[in-house]
Length: 145
Image 1 (cartoon, rainbow, N blue to C red):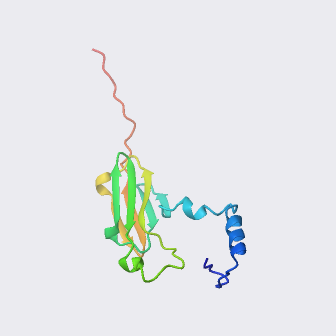
Image 2: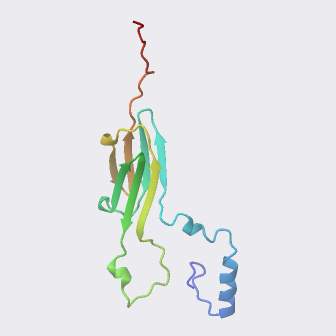
């Protein structure tokens, strides 16, 4: 296979087979697939709101949907493979860019759903989620009649 380093092909079949066999026992072998349909996200809490920041480089706002339903915030980003990438005249030696649908879901509670706002700037999606105002302790004194 085409490795990043040392940028040379090795046609020794036995050596390639041994390398493949040894890679199966590497503890990090499955790491690239652990979050294959996910993206990096930071969530911060302020006194009056939550701020969700998600890294979505290469996506336009038309590729992203944000939904809140039953206390669940869902961020969905979809990237289709371009036609030029599917060109059969050229074969990939190495393809590292991912295509498809990427989804993250978060539980949210006590928020003002109607006031949620979002912006996308330089591949960073920022979602501002206002909290509901805290009500004081509730209670009522009952008069005896």
